[in-house]
Amino acid sequence: MMNRRVISLIGISGVSLFAIAYVVGGLLVENYSFVSQYISESYAIDTEYGMVLRTFGYIPSGILITLFCFLAYRKFPSSSLIKSGFYGLSIFYGIATIMTGFFPCDSGCNPDFVNPSVSQIIHSLVGMLTYAFVPISIVLIGLGLKRSPGYSRLSQKAIIYGVVSGALVILLLSNPASNYIGLIQRGIESLFIIWVITCAIELIKPTKDKMHSNLSSA
Image (cartoon, rainbow, N blue to C red; front, side):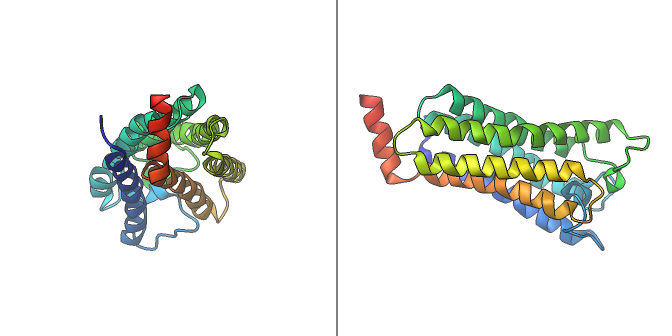
């Protein structure tokens, strides 16, 4: 079975690759605004470096995040809520990131949905599912951890990240024409990234190794 340090590295690598891709992508597109434009616009179907960003950034990032979520939940206390939460993350964050890489949005991400391509339709649907279910998945993990001794702080962080990211999703969807959609979206994605990194760091804490060993032998 894969050890905790390797699993931790997979998670951190996955979200780091995602963050690097959306920062570099924005810098490569002329006149791109990190404040007012969606992340997807930086790797849209017509962008010069879109294929490179998708192939070497978003798709491998999604693969690593999916793998991390499927492996990580086994290292936390046994709980149906925790398992459901990590499975939700693997599907709606990991696999969804892969899907949006394979199906980029149209030029400018076609916010008015005028004659959208099949790729745009799939991209938008996957994006909606991501923002609907990832915050819920994080909260589920938090509620599951709440029942386990030694995980109260991690539980609180999960619930806070889940609730705040959910609130930002509502803000994003309530005013898609806002001049700050890029900033709001990056706030949401940053919370997802921070949560994965938080879990990855938690896995390699010596006290957790000892506690997990004691629980297994009990």
